[in-house]
Length: 120
Image (tube, rainbow, N blue to C red; front, side, top):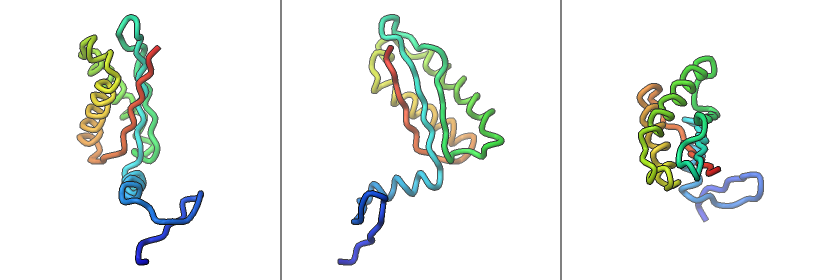
């Protein structure tokens, strides 16, 4: 037995490569969660996306950046067709790609992005 043994709070054992990679990414670049609400009947977004970050940005500068990301994301969502808005997987991928590109261009960081699409 020569593998690394880590304790994760629930037990002791070997960690998979993917778990270790994800934890390393989170520790370096943080996480960004974007919540988008879609009216299923009207097939349109409801309000503006909510963006929550942990460990991704320097706090004093983060409010302005988060507001920029919200408006950038809202503008992108407004360009999606009704068919694209009906497909929650498509919306998730558009949100992830849009945020990843914009965050990297402004901060040179690649946080884990978790898009959440709620149909109301």
